[in-house]
Length: 185
Image (spheres, rainbow, N blue to C red):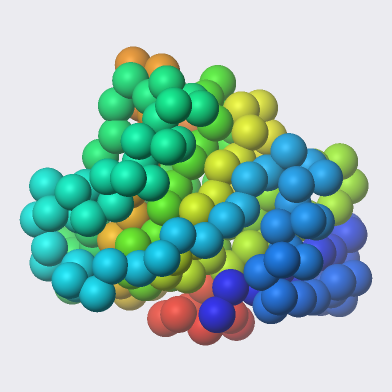
């Protein structure tokens, strides 16, 4: 189940707000320019599905989103707990960074933890199957797929260079909870 927790950036031990109500989550995030919505899941898609099959299953939603953003590319990332590069891939996204492009992800299956750091608050969003998130360009954030990643996501890019992170050098991400096998630590 999707969940939003909000913390003061100096206190990762005490959530100021917590909700698993998707409508309330969307309203809170919208105030920051973060898009959060749900797409219906296609029961034909499961772990191991070919990228073309995943894209075809969500083509109607992809087309609608593409008409708003004008994507130059999109791809499907599918990671299983036994992926040989899971540790290095996890580390790549765990430090606070920004992008020159919106970071848009739709979770087809599984889950992942997006943490955004606007101003002096930290917004920790557990995204689950059916969730679409769009983190605006320039917003400080990090992503945790957990030590045993198990998800499929469609990634959307409006810039031809795709995922390019600009790391802030701030160690804030190290002080906040990590995703532990689909549950929060």
